[in-house]
Image 1 (tube, rainbow, N blue to C red):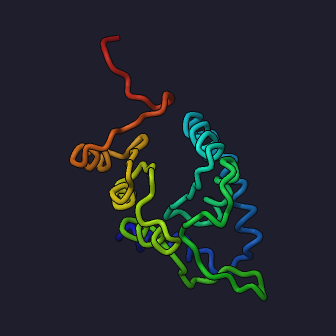
Image 2 (image 1 turned 90 degrees about the horizontal axis):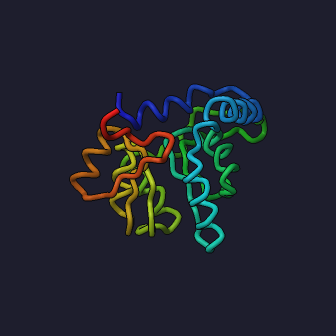
Image 3 (image 1 turned 90 degrees about the vertical axis):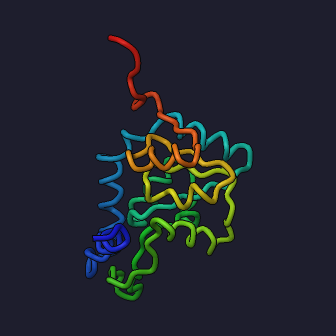
Amino acid sequence: VSELAICGEMVQIYSGLREDDMRSAAAEFFSTQIERNIFPEMLTLVRQLQAAGTEIWAVSSTCDWVIEEGVRRFNIPTNRVLAAQVAINSAAGLVTDTLLDVPTDEGKVTALARVGLTAPDAVFGNSVHDAHMLAIARRAFPVNPSPALILRSAQENWPVYYPASVAPKTGAP
């Protein structure tokens, strides 16, 4: 199954559920499963960039409910989230199975272009599915990259960064 298909299906599966319930579940999931994995260095960097007037966007193939919950920790407005998204039946407040976007691989570049970002100053990514987005940046920063992104980073001469909590151990014991 392709990355595009599986990421789309992972948001479509909630069809028929209440959007409010999905947002509540996303908040609980993020706080109990993901928040502890935020790299302090990245949080500091984002805050420094914001203080300098930099516009920060979040692009992900994960569903918008989870990403929107996560970016609150970084003070990124939800209107700067480009994530997997389905239509909502606003009259009933229900999730539908109609896909609106699934930004992954080349789709991340397409999503950024829709908002006028064709050559971002910097892009940070951790997966090979970020490679197309990293490639359009003036500066690409793979952070704690997946094995496939490590290989791509070597081919592209992108500097790889490992936050302290996940930095590979080097040297003799």
